[in-house]
Image: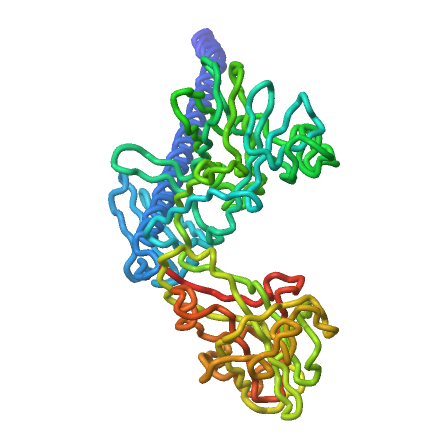
Length: 526
């Protein structure tokens, strides 16, 4: 009995470590299985989030596509009638714009997958005109920028030379003024039915070439400003040289990025060589890079003679050409090309350099504001849909308790802004004269009647602004007038604002240091 009992106890004792070990293994296995299941759940959940996000991003793209297809006419998908796809790779999305019309939108998209939803928004989405625009820039002397820089003559300027030289180590700099394109325009390539065409294409005409098998010419992004100059390799440099960007000051480093934007094979068989600059032109228009232009150099091989016609060449048709294809925004905001005010109490003084502008009528003395705008950036053939002149009233002096009746009239004679601040006019507008010496046909500005628009308080919609109005934006609807200006049926001498009350709003001029407060002409066109 005792022996039997001892054997049982011994057996139990010997099994205890084994049981303990098995229990530990089971516990570890349980924990491992639980962690594996947890990780799998986390992974699956993250995958659901990712796929929902991808769907939401696709929804933003789909909504933006619908918006751009509609263009300036509106009719965009809104929350009540969103863009929907219920089978986007097993996920779904619902996307819409914050308004059915307009030129700057916020898009919202919700993507859903396996019960997980992700919502994304994109603000400040510009609406572009549905039709593609084209522009060809081929400036001549005085309105262009191109020059050769020569390492063998590092202090000489060739800004007025009739050729651009790319042999013996010489390089060429070119820059085109893109201000004729509406701000916010988007450079785009396009398909002509056969091949994709560049959104921005630089073309140069060969005047001399010799040899050069395997030669390649690359374009590089210029990173520093430079001055073209007026020399042909003789005299004191007044512009860019190999050593300096303006004839005096040294380049910072090389002045250009070392990685080429594009490289083309030189061909003796073609009079025109072209470089696709779509990406960099898009970056210039998007203000990602400052437009200092490009630098051309032979990047592969060597060549005895490679000359291109510059903008100073005697044949205008051979000048460097920059062909652009772009989408223009529906809305463009112009600042005045000239603004001033005139004062019946100071009839010989000019206020062209003054900020703020002034417009009031005390019954004894009155001031009137003149504004003019340049429409050269509006593409030819555009249809003006609306035009709104906006001025920011930052204060109100001598309030009368009357409504702010300020009317806009069409100026019918040319005038000169000037730069004075209530002093002698020079050759600039005053109450009595258009330009300091030629009298207005009618003192106080010559304009046609009746008025074309009455001031409106932008915030309340009151026209004229109410008696208690003091600060905020006021506007005048100039749609009909701007249409006639752009069509050329009316001479664009601008508008004159005339008040019938003594209330004197403080209206920042174009000389105001804060650009956001300067006068604006907001035009919508197609």
